[in-house]
Length: 324
Image: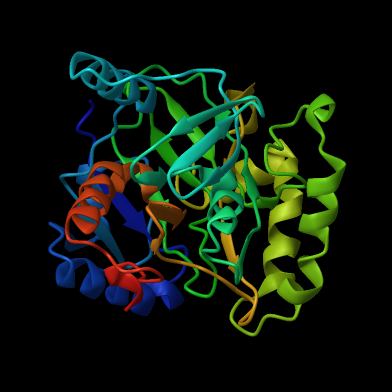
């Protein structure tokens, strides 16, 4: 783990009120943050730029998702659990799970944390039928800066109309620097850039959601699409990052990172992208339907919440506390 800290900067003075609102939210949620000025920012992270004010989060740290997952897997095995790789779940219901279409396993209580497929699994239990997955692709570029050049994560002020943070400049666990992510519409669930994995049925299902999404009054969808698609071009994405860290140059960021796909839940009746965690209960099952950013950051806490909810006998259809 690298204890880097994070600064959130403004790209114009017009964003200062949004920064102050973000600060109020952070304080209300018990975060250790403070508002700093340009001079203080220069001392904390000399490469970052802001207009008037910035937020400083000294306790922010970065760790390896792979390392944490491997550690958890080892703990499961040590406690007598079983992890089955290459075992696709093809169907499930109360008390059972079907694997690869040929094997049926008896289960007590099923926890659905299937990410991009969470809605599909939930629907097998009659849960979350008003939701569909509307995935978005995140692209990253890695820089050739010497490790330690950038010491802090540098984030923008988010557009509160959309659930995406925007391009930011971050430090990896080994001290390298990366730019991203984008929030480009994905054409199928596992759209990681390999056309050989293209799933026509999923592409059609996702495309059929866009007429409703485009008519949403909750989000600036035309603006989102207009700003995101150009980020396929590396120079455009770098230009976005330059507003946060002016010394970022196209020539320094040539290594393309592995794309990520955001498992974003879309609420059909309201035509709204869900912007908070959604956990619902079914018969002998609990479904983590929406676990968008900061899902990785919050993973252990969400896991504790789900387990406590099961022990407390969470009722069918109940949503997470954040949705009540």
